[in-house]
Image (cartoon, rainbow, N blue to C red; front, side, top):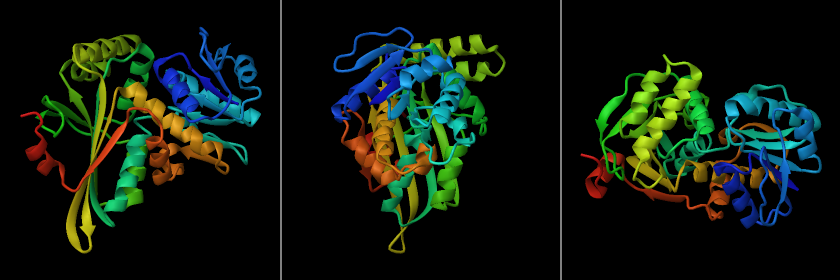
Length: 337
């Protein structure tokens, strides 16, 4: 049996659907307020209470944690399940990878959209450029955040540091409006750059609209709850009247057969919850048959295997690879001007 914590939220519901579509067998879905789930067992569970958590996990060969905010909840979930010897896939919880784990443990963290697929995709794209030299990534999310999602988004944005001043009024292909590009760097981006051996690696959050941008600028000076409220409000205003979407552009430059070459990957998904759930479900499918391993998903799961599993899931996530750089794509596909 596979258990899904936070299974009644946007990410958890989608993860359950995807796991069912993959035919994983019995599923147990847990959350604070259980709801009927077709084809699965529903349970009430308090992830902050060890006894409740262990009762939920009893009989599970693997637990997928989609409970949010992961910055606050994941450490306790990880410690409790590790002590019980239960395999874990966490859509968040990047810091948990540094916890002491018993021999033979199996756990993947940061198995979501960003971090998660944001690290796996450049590694997968590297098959197209035998000698990569420069990596540029733009991660765009146009979606309304829940309070829990906003807390995790804010935690990630603040933990990554400012990375320098934002670039306003930027244009990228496939994005219909001007963007604010906020540079950022975290453990995953540094790992990917080192793994690829590139001379230059730059990553940006690609923000459409101005309300979320202002909320992020103000967040450092606001108390936690007010900062979260500002992120929720800003994301809702920017997404109002728009179709939710997550869109990543990843450009890798280098040498192919001794000549300069560039490739660009475009990922689209019908929202950040769908993308997060798709990565978590794919990681669960991989870990269910994997040898003992503990770490961040992008560091532990072979990128080609993760993308193969992702593509077999009916998630709405689409991948396109172009034999051109972003500047060339801007001229042919349009974008904000």
